[in-house]
Every structure is written in C-alpha cells, then in structure tokens.
Length: 347
Image (cartoon, rainbow, N blue to C red; front, side):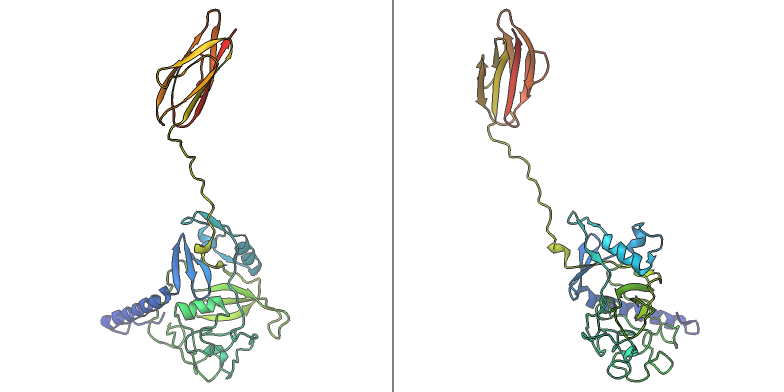
C-alpha cells in the first residue's frame, strides 16, 4: 500500500476512515444481492447461485494445505465436494467452479480490444479489468461469475483503467488508476469490500475453462480472476490458484429429508394375556384380567398393572414371555402402548 507517512496523523486517519466508509457503503448495496442462508452459505440473487461463505474452504476444511490447486485438481475437488448444511440438516452436492462466458454474450474477445479498442481497461473484453462493472462497456454482464461478484455486487475496483475509459488498451501511466492501491502510480489507501465472505484472498481464483477451438492462447486452458487487482485473464492449467466452489440455485429450495413422526400412542392401549403349556391362571390387580387361556383389557395409557401367574395343582410356572420376562410369577408393567404377555406353565 502507498506510503502516507509524509501526511499528518490527522490526514492519515481521514484517509483510512474514508476508505472504510466506502467499503461499508459498498457492502450495503451488496447485502441486497447476497443473502446469508446460514450454515456457511450465501445466495447470490443476481447470478442465482449459492457461494460458499468461506472463499478458501479447501484449506480451512483440511482438504488442501494451502487451498491453491491446478485447474484439474480444482475442478475435481469442487465436483466431489459434499458440504453439510448445518441449518437444513442436508448434505449438498453438485458444486462446480465459477463459470466464465463471453462478457458480450456472444463470443470471446481474446485480445483485450473491446468495441472501442480499450477493452482491457474499461470492461469491454474478456481479458482485462472492470468486466461487468457499473458504467463499463457491458455493465452488469453475468458472463463471468467471479468478475460480476467482484465488480457488480461487491463494487470493488480494478487496478487500472476505469469504466467508460477510451484510450490505450495497455495498463500503463497513461491509463487512469482509480484503484489507488499505491503499487501503481500513487493514490489514497483503498479498502476492498469482502461483503459477507470470509477468507477471500487477494489473489488468483480459477474460473471456467477456455473453449476450443480459439484464436488465442493455445498454450493456456482456463480463466483465472485476480481479486487483488480485479483482472481476468487466461492461464496455463498447471498454474496453482485458489478454488471457490459455487452451486446453482438457492439452498432454501433443497428438498429436506422427510422426518419420521413418532408412533402414535393410543389413549387406551390394550393388554393381552394368554397362557401356554400347562394349565394356570393369570390375574391382575387392576383392569379385570382373570383368565386361564386368553383375555384382554383396555386401560388408560400410563396405567401400571401387576400380573400374577398361578399354576393349577401339579403344574409348575416356568416363565413369562412377551412384555413380561423372568421366572418370578409376578410381573409389573406400565401401559404406554398395547402389550402382549404370555405366562408359560409346565405340565
């Protein structure tokens, strides 16, 4: 950043305060287009896609030590990503790299010329600055999802040139430098607006692959977008860049897995009792159970019933089965639902 030590302390504070206010204003306009859905997911109402809130999730999730990958690695990582949405309780798949399509909506301009020959520095071509920015040649273009996010939504600036600028197509001292980062040709400090995103790196992020056949860059295979300077260009696919996964649609439209309702508890569950083997009798202290072969009764849910098994002379009680267990001829149970009990006797 530009050295401002020659300024008074009051002036330095004023510069920084103005830069911070500019970033806050930009975020206010972006917040209407970027909706925080919770669970680390941001819905972009303009592009109709969902961004990961963590712009370097590949690193923070532990999938990659730095988050910088080749184009092949980046595309494979995004395609295989299974992200658990903690708010809706579902695992989201179908992730991809941000798309890069012609800014003019028809065909790619590889040479940075644009309609007036100044495309590289006024948003008029697919390689350059200010792509889709307000006031640019193709303002609001959704061809490049990364450029649209940087310029149209977050309202960040480019390293050189400006929307509507007409002049040299190169980024040199004759081109305006409204970015004012201090590494160009001087200017006041500038604070980038990251909006609701975290870990958004001021560096290169992979975009879409280059179409084939094409009239330029035969040794390169994919687009990259530099969030540090607002530049989109073509790169060798073996270059390592950061990866930002994006997903079509809004997560609020995801069909949630059906919940299984708890089983209904009858108001008056049934207690069914029978005997097996030798002859005997089962009685209860409530509900009127008094049977030798089988019987049943309905009682209010929660009723505690004590059953007693009594064998006939010469017969031995063996055990209970069903809702009662054990070899003691007395069983106590609570009716939370309908239950069946068998008293087993030995001839």
